[in-house]
Structures are given as C-alpha cells and as structure tokens.
Image 1 (spheres, rainbow, N blue to C red):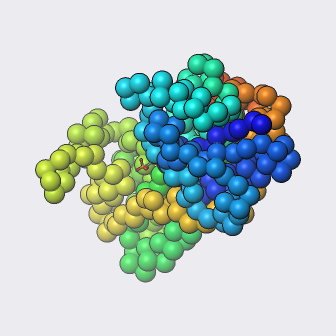
Image 2 (cartoon, protein in one colour):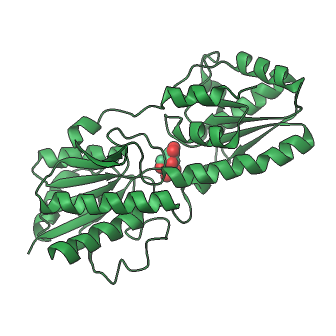
Length: 343
Ligand code: F6P
C-alpha cells in the first residue's frame, strides 16, 4: 500500500488544517492510501517524529487555525546531515511521497529534496501571498479580513483624536496584505515595498488632506523602506532589555517621522501575529480544501515535483523549480486603484 507523508512548514496561517484534512480524506477515501503526519515541519523528518493520520484524527479540524502537525522555520538543509537524515527517515517509515504545505522557503526545500529523488507535491500556505503559480495562497484572505477590520476600527479613534494612525501589516518583502486591506479599509495612504515612496511626499499628502479632514490612516507593509532614508536599518536599530540590538519596526519609524514632518499627533498600531491567528475565512477554507484534494490527485497520478495553486477559477499546476527563487509582487493595477483614494 502507498504511504504519503504530510508536513506544514514556515509561519503558520489559517487554513493549514483544512488542507491537511482534505489531503488525508481524499487519499484515504478515494485512493485507499495510508497517510502519516510529520511533526513540526521538516524537523519531524529529521527526528523521525511522525504519527498516522486517520479520518478520525482530521475530523473537526476544518475551522481550526494553526496546524495540528506543528510547524517550524528551521531549514533542514542548513543542519549538518539534515538532508541525509530526511532521506533515511523517509526510507525507514516507508513514505513514498511527500505533501509539503507552506511558505516559499518550505517549497524551496521541497525542490532540493525532489532533486534527490523525493516525490513531492507542494501546496502554497502563507498569509503573505508572495508565491508565484497561484493567485492566492492559503491564509491570505483571512489575514486581509482581520487587517481590514483593524483599519475600520482605528478610523474611529483617529477621527475622534484628529490623529494620524499608522497601521503596520505583515507581508515579508511584499505588500499584498497592505494593498488589499488598505483598499478595502479605505486607507488614506498605503506604503509597500513594490512602489517607491518618500517620507516627504507622504507627509505633504497628509498635510494637504489635513486641510479637509483632520485625521489620516496610513497603512505600511512591514517590508516597505522609504526612498529618502539612506540607512533605515541603522536609523531604526534599537536595543532590547538584555542589551541585544534589533531592527525597529518600519511602522514605528514612519510614525515618528510623519509626526515630525507634519506636526500632527501620530500613533502606531502593529497588527503582528493577529493576522495569522484564529479560524480561516470561508474563501480560505474553500481554497485549502480544493488545493488539498488537487494535491492528493497529483500523488495518485504520480505527478511529482509540482505545486498546486489556483489561477482564475481553475486549479493550476506549476513545476516547483519554476516557483522557487522568485517572489510574486503586488498587482500594480490594484495598487493604482487603491491610490486613487490617497490623500
Ligand atoms: O508567515 C509569514 C510572516 O507572517 C511574515 O509576513 C512575517 O515577516 C513573518 O511571518 C514573521 O513570523 P515569524 O516571527 O514566525 O518568523
């Protein structure tokens, strides 16, 4: 009987459990395969930490956030003999193919393993939506919904206090969440890594707006860096209570700089891990389930070294070596539409 391993790797996101459930159910019910859950990303393959998945063990997980398998950002290829340990354990547990659900780096690792003969199928799961080969990644819609709600909520306090409120959103080095949530929440300015901006221009835009409306909401993606700041990292470097230095958030930096340049009272809200938390939205449940079923079909059809995604309303299949080494950048037509409402 064929035995398939499933793992989740990279930052968790809502919808991972829905995907695990879909892969498991489809493989067991339609194809009579055995399924093993691998714990904590690739770590479980290095340490031999695996457990059987049954119809019972994936029952009830569809609406649950996080991942029942646990996750990790550890890159096994940077661990001494990491790849060898993985290959050995795949052999030991008689796992003949692997479903990897996760971020860009998880898929990059899958690509290296597949070159060493591991039969892999990948599913894109990250709130960042930065993986090529799919219009949307699992978790993105939920993050946008949470971020939009936050932007709605800070409007009232910004308006009451006549303040600028800077809302910092995740996205790693892309501005997908910021663009979608900023557009949906009616942000007065959105700052993303894909579109050049300066603090001076941003301040001028807000000052002009201030003549008409006495508050503003500025959405900034965590990876955005102003063009007129020569060395953001040096300027924003901070020291924690233990004396370790770290890079301060772009949100805090932009907040301080905009206050200086506009003379307006400014506050910053960093949404952080709230964006990755809780139950998946309806679109994420549907996407995760469709991609899980599609991944199980790929395994059955022995179509390996691919990632399943969704393009338009169809399932799309992309070789994983075409997905790696690239970042899917924000759709600029959408950003332009959002920018119509700036100021
Ligand atoms: O999951 C992706 C992401 O949310 C990025 O947007 C963010 O930079 C990163 O995770 C931070 O997560 P962690 O602290 O788990 O590395």
